Length: 129
Image (cartoon, rainbow, N blue to C red; front, side, top):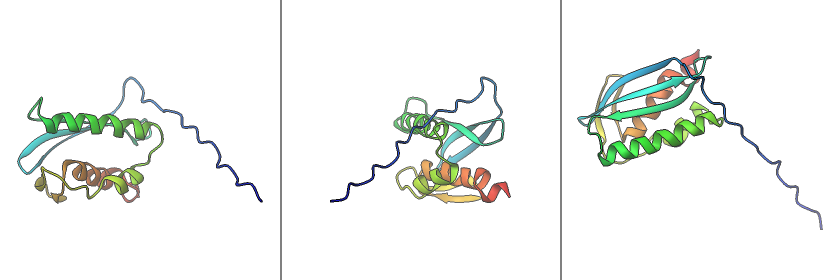
């Protein structure tokens, strides 16, 4: 009987952002829930972290956004590409959903969907061309 080959061990290394970095802050609203999306950038202009500040501090939405941002930022720092992130998060559906304040993204199915679409528009492969 032939032995199965073991997959190569994958070791990811975290690429932390410099202490001082460029960032982009974008004001948005999804179904009248206002917030600010801040994207921290590596020196080459690629996103390395995200923060969402919702207008209702202490709310469940605000807490879930903070948790999502921490996990998303760590994933980016360990090598997840924006394209892979978009594939995984775009289209997630939960409240709040509906009309947005952004004419480039007139509707979304959640705040996570909105963030994925914003990143795709501004930092995805097509945006770099």
